[in-house]
Image (tube, rainbow, N blue to C red):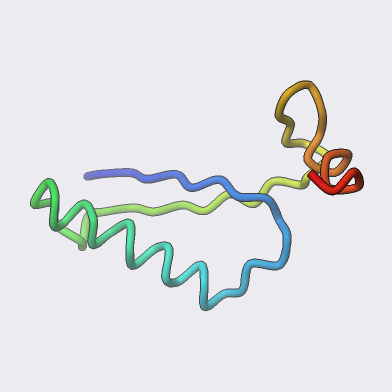
Length: 67
């Protein structure tokens, strides 16, 4: 029973794009590991850019600086 957790910033990813991520991650596990898609779980967590940081800064701050 594989479990895949995808974390992305909450910047307007459409339901269609999320569906593509879920289908693609599921298919990858089927293709590479031979897993059953009916028992493969994919969860997408959307994180506010104030709660995601890199190099000591939030993504919000980096985006304001154009990084």
